[in-house]
Image (cartoon, rainbow over all chains, first blue to last red):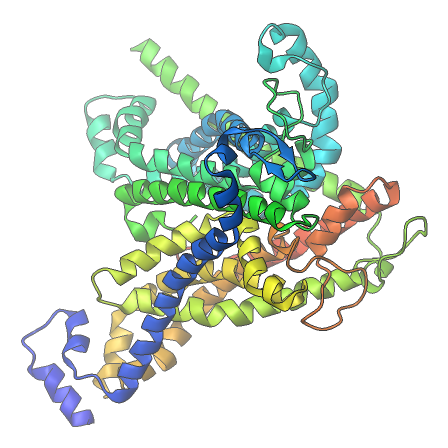
Length: 330
Length: 277
């Protein structure tokens, strides 16, 4: 056996390293082992399928009862058994968009600083701090949100905003602290590390020659960044932002703790709202009737489908710059 | 020329400000945790059960134990699949499956954890007709798989081909080369992936809300509701009692210390290699 494999490997015509392995005939152990590994890979595919199927099955009653009206009506009345998810869809979209409005400039700025402009000695400490921020559990953000952020917004941010920009419907109404604005701010803090670290990897994957070419024709450092680096990595950066959006859409605990949990569509950012993830978190264990549980699962299914679409698109965009091995991690 | 230089300097300064603002919340959060939490952390806090409202003292010992049990379950469920799948991704020459698995794993990684909670609910809680540690552990295991998978793949790829060839050249079958040479060489890196995943699931609250449910007593078996530190922090934080708020801060300080220790261990394990978060 030993002699056989050695001679087979040796007689091969100077094959590239990986190929030597290929040409040996697989023994029984190898075949079983390969089967086990492939099995593990299939389990992951099947789990993903089962996830969608299980939610679809549990939501069937609500889907059959309410149809498309589920997405467009805003009555949420568990007692009467009437369910419309519009306030939650609205709350999820508004809080996530608000988070992106705050987080995108900060994250892209920080990523550019870390990848292009910062002196070498300061890069890894800041990158480390940002990674730590990504590791903080959601419930801790929520706790901090309730007791620090919300009072601060109520006393220091919302009154002046209401006084100066109060003519816009966005900033009208009494400053509760708790509400859509608080949710948007806490979400922004939470997605900044994701967008920053993925964008930074995208920027680092931009070939050096791009920068050299720009510098060579006399561009300043910022011009180099803008015309050579940002443009080259544009699709990856959009992907990074979409990854952040995916996080913001599905984030549960911190938002539940600061958004106020009132199922209403209110235009003002100061007003309490409700998101898809929070309504599941708050009401799932209390849901007594089957249709109630089914409606909550349907909201979960919607959330799943939307985040799969957003994340899938984000992955493809990030991979298009650096390849799967690079942009795949977060 | 001068305007261009001015713009360049201004923009550089702005990106620097952005970086500072981005890390500022970490300092604020950590500062508040230390100030508000440290005073409530005591030996009792680690050794005692929660007390009813109004009675001072009491701790989160059962919640810490509960979290550890469910993390253990998650590792038992998720680790074999994650590692085997990762080795598959690194070694396979199949055209389509590895690409699909990689893509699905990355997408799964972004699925909201509360949705994973619903999945575990339909898989375990509904058939068993009760909330249980098992359901919570399964939900956490599901979250752990894609993280371990991707780091394992990356770490197995980093093992020099010469090592594999040396083993194969001695006539060792491929599966033994993988088990005895490749995996041990990648051990530190894989451990990093596991620690990163543990750090992530240790703080997960949403998937436990309607799987583990929470419990104010010591754990009573894997088929019973069980306490978890994040659940306890959540319950205390939204309660109306000052003493419970204090305990929420203390619990959060303990939780974040555990999470940071795990992340830190992960970094130390692979110092000098490509750091996989």
